[in-house]
Image 1 (tube, rainbow over the protein chains, first blue to last red):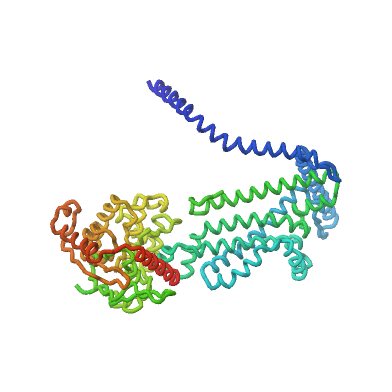
Image 2: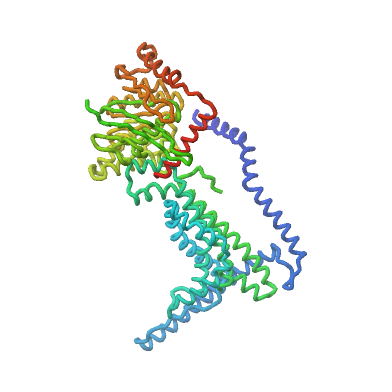
Length: 332
Length: 285
């Protein structure tokens, strides 16, 4: 009896699923198939166009050349890693041997000085952009809150912000370079100068959207919430902590997403000129190198830069979804 | 019984670019402990301004508000406000919204366990214990307003100020809320000032109905004592001649004595007042 019932239920379920299939299919088509079609069409146009562009370094790289380079760059990375491991093994062995001979010997360890691989450069770029972005956020969010709370401060600072906001990173870079060279003098530097220059340039360019969005978010606080705070006689700090900051979280996140996008764009330019060993330097070095592989390597970098930018934005969006109370706000 | 709250000869003048605008003129009212007062009048007549002055959110131009022998100069939890749009903090759950108030008002006088009991007690009072850990966007408008009331009650106010608390609710929910409020009032016997547009609501809930004249320079037109026995039952009262007499008195005041001629110019005036109020609000904020 029970098996009969369960049979009946499964049958019924099957018909339900069948009835819903078209709706699922349509959804599937929209969500998965359309983007794939879009990418395929793009690849087609790209490879067709690439075949017809001749440069002094050979044909413009098409999708096939790029995919070959991805494999190449990855293999180069693996080989370099192997060399590095071997280098440290040799060094350790040598040091161990000398200590065995002479116990008072103070072993020297030297860092591996091989050329950075493409994968290492991605890592450097990510670290640089995130440091610059975090530094910008640490300055921008408190500043934005202060500006949002005080109309007078807003009137005073707004012109300065509006003037610096549209400045290109390339204009900042020489100044930052000179200032860092003058002030960051240390016999045993913790980080490279080129890293500092790139990071500060990123900070200078991506600070403004965060300041503006935070201040607008704070200034447009619902007057009812302010009245609640006044009726409760919340002290100033508690008012900021319990009302102002949570209320402006959605606006703060919007600013942070915009800023991170700008930071990533600025970084590539900054690395090119500051010679920070990241993706920007990779592009520049390949351009200077001018081998037959250069263009396809640069094109690979372009695609990787795009993918990482996209991933950074998605990560920020997920963070916003997780942390913001305002689930109704359009997140796209 | 002695006077708990003395609204003493309040004038309210808003400065505008075109000269001063007198919103309230000589509003004078004494309220006893445990009284339920309704303020009724046409929109734009300054009911909310009176309430905001009592709350301390506005400062009267002349005259003042005396609570328990002390003049009111700023907002405070002893004059808790239930706002029209619930004004719950959307990032906090119902429990946390009440907790914010309780933590502030009873910071030293209650232990953590006592605070928890007190928060839950107040949520139970408004029948919201089942939605304690929901956020405002997960519950209905009536439920949000219940939590707004629980938050105000949890401050243990000497006067509870309600600014059209049920104005944004549908008729059935509103009736439900009125019954709840009467039930709470039976238990706590709070002193309440409530603004309303709804004649039935005013007669059903109040001990006295304060009817305001139209602005500018609005003031108290008439005060009607509602002498109906409590607990009151809306169904029984619907057929009660005394209830209907009160009802028609309020209606007569609103639609005969203070008939609002809605010409385009007065409409513009009400808009202007709203604008002025908005700007002073943001200026004081």
